[in-house]
Image 1 (cartoon, one colour):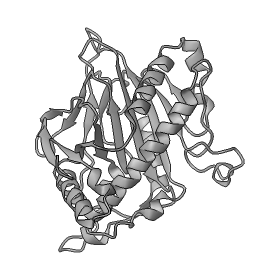
Image 2: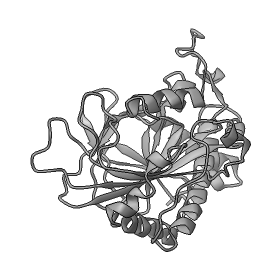
Image 3: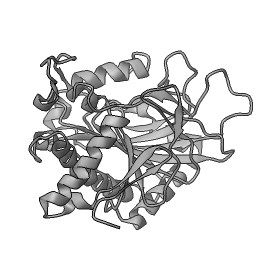
Image 4: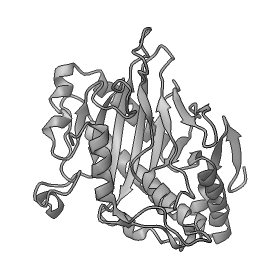
Length: 326
């Protein structure tokens, strides 16, 4: 396969990102060109040759299944309600991502940057800043998740450099976003869709993601659907071995003045089996002011959105998603 090759799969591009690690600028620009096309067309794409060890990936999937197999009492011992920074276990139907629909038929576990309680950001009460909760009785859970968090963060940083090039910016344009950056690793378990679901009930309601970009690790069950930009058609995004599904979040959509898309997606688990997925949400430095990029103003020179900090944006989205309880 050449250094950077794109193929189509269920209408979503598949991009080989090896070239972003090349010392040759032309290789990096070739991948950036493919990223530009995918981001302008739908904001969703697969990546391969990402560099995350398959052994680590399998360990994450195994640890996730072991956690969700714990008795409810063990999971509730690390309930997110005990955390001041949205870390830990989230029970079934605790979140409603699609307004007007029943709560999502999924349970999850949140992991973030693990900050001590005396860290200045924690002392100041900054949003989503603080220590993680870790379950008891799942050997190696913490070490595996911390190793995977670091690996996913590195790929996110690599993609942000590629996105900068794709937007005709300096390759290090988003480097300040990486300083004291926030990110969330979320383990998810979807029971099978019930035979007689409530009207509109889904594993995960239709929504866009909050932050910069998401790296989604899927099992082999499927169920992810992406809404086409120019129609009401839902596009299946089935698992492809060795790949990640990547999608842009609202911050990139806003930063690029709608040039790049943060696209609506949902999960409906019709397989009859348990479904597990592991999204990694890259956010960036919460103090970052998001305002229209100079290369995205267009001929009219008009920004469609007022400036906002990432922290302000996240607080608003969490309040909407959790009914005002954050």
